[in-house]
Length: 288
Ligand code: ADP
Ligand code: MG
Image (cartoon, rainbow, N blue to C red; front, side, top):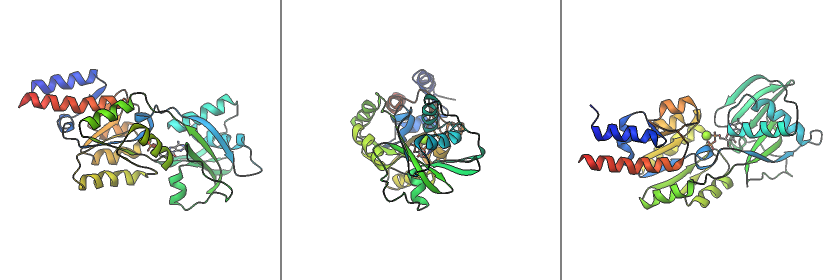
C-alpha cells in the first residue's frame, strides 16, 4: 500500500506540473546531489528563430541553402526544424519533396532531395566525421548553428537563436541554496552552452555531446559519488534518463523519453523540478 502522505503528495504534484510515474522516483528525488539539464525546451523556451544563413558555394544563394534544409526539416519535429520551416514560410520559398528521410538521432537529419543526398547536422557531427569547413569560413558559435551538407560536403550553415526561460535562473539559484549542483548537457556548441551556463550560474557544462556520450556523462558523475537526476526530452536522451538515479522527461518531448523516465515534467518548467525535490524532502520527513 502507498502511505497516505505519499499518495497525497503524488496527487498534489500532478497539479504542480509533475507526473510521477513511479513512487521510487519520487522517493529518490530528495537524495539528488546533482541535476543534469538538457538545454533546449527546459532551460530555454525551445523556440528557435533563424538569425543568419551562409552559403559556402558561389552557385548557391542563401535561399537555396534554406530550401534544401527545409525539405528535410518538414519531416522533423525538433525545435530547430520548426524554426527553419517558419523562416522558409516567411520568405515564401517552396519546399521540395524528399525521399529516404532519416533522423540521425541527436545529430541531425538526412534525405534525398532532387537527386542529391542532403544532411542538416550539428557541429558535433562534423567533428566526429572530420569534415572541414572551407578555409575562409569560421563557424560562428555565438548562436546555435546547423550545417547543410551535400554528399558529406558542407555547403552552408544556418544560425538560430533561442531564449532562456524566465524561470530558469531562479530554479538554478534555489538548487544552489540546497547544495544541489546543476550541470548543462547539450548537443549544441561550446559557446552557446557556456553562455547559457554562465547566465544561469550553473556549476558546469558539457557541449557537443553526442547521444551515447550523454549516458557516459551520467555514469561518470555517479562514479564520483553524485546522486544524479537528469531532464531530457529526446529519443537520444532515453538511455541517459534510464541510467540517472532519477530520470525526468520533459512533457513536450518524445514518448520514449516519457516511458523511460520515472517523472514527467508536464509544463517543461525547471522550477517544477526544484519543487519536486523540496517536496520529496518534506514528504519523507513527515513519515519519520
Ligand atoms: P539538445 O542536447 O540541445 O537537446 P539534441 O540532442 O536534440 O539537442 O540535438 C543535438 C544537436 O543535433 C542539435 O543542437 C542540432 O545541432 C542537431 N540536430 C538534432 N535534430 C536536428 C534537426 N532536426 N535538424 C537539424 N539539426 C538537428
Ligand atoms: Mg534534446
